[in-house]
Length: 363
Image 1 (cartoon, rainbow, N blue to C red):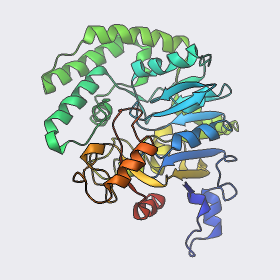
Image 2: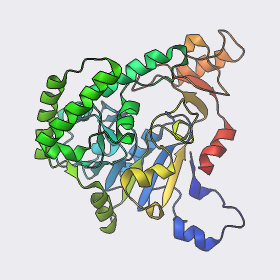
Image 3: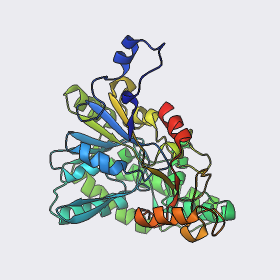
Image 4: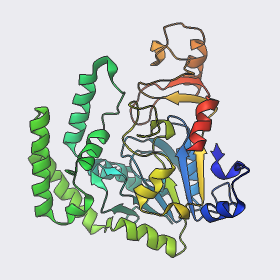
């Protein structure tokens, strides 16, 4: 684990410019007004564990990117809870948790994750807020994600098939539907049908529009009843102005960033420092500490370049079976329990890569 604040800046950088941009007094993140925890490899570095530890010290825990394609497990009073979409701060009763506008929200997944928390005695009522500017992810986005991956054949990118890419595509082509539209059902239903029909035409698929609309109407009622939908920009900035401490919980990692990762074998959102401001609506200069998490070796799920890989096809890797070093990769995978929480896939394992750690830190 490293913090940008813990490393000396270049000699030509003035002390004044540092103090204007970032706090120089806190490298742990515990005493920052706004702190971010990000992955500095290909994900699965253990950032969820660090975010969980820090969340105890914060008032608001926020997600700013991705969707339910992330994943880590927390154990509370002996009970396991799998988090994919929701911020991990929900396990702490004093926190308010927030899905920012940079997140794509699968409402079905949202309530599926809330259920075991409430059943386990963790009250979430009034403690989850969703930005009105966040885009919605629908069943047909997941359907299209699977179709696109299948068409790629051997050149597949290893998507989670959660519909993340297609949902961001709808957003980028300005056909997407924001959470805010759920407040006006007639407007929402009209937009939903148009978007679903467009996907049916483009991909020659059948969408169960009536079934999904029926489910969404029920979820909508529950969201409105719990006052989940908020003006995200005002919510996060008012919290900051009131002196509340904000923890930004990153999903995925630097080397999966849509711009800076190993494109096209990446996710569809901004996973790095720049994504915090655009995904939450908070000015960059308000972010006091950014912690990049690294583990003692490297893993990645799915396809793409992996210079220090030590796993062969028996372990889900790309190296020839029995190649030198693969016994070490197998050991890392088994001892490290390197199985994806979201996908259930084996994680490819290899040596820690100092060169791209330096690259991640630079970004």
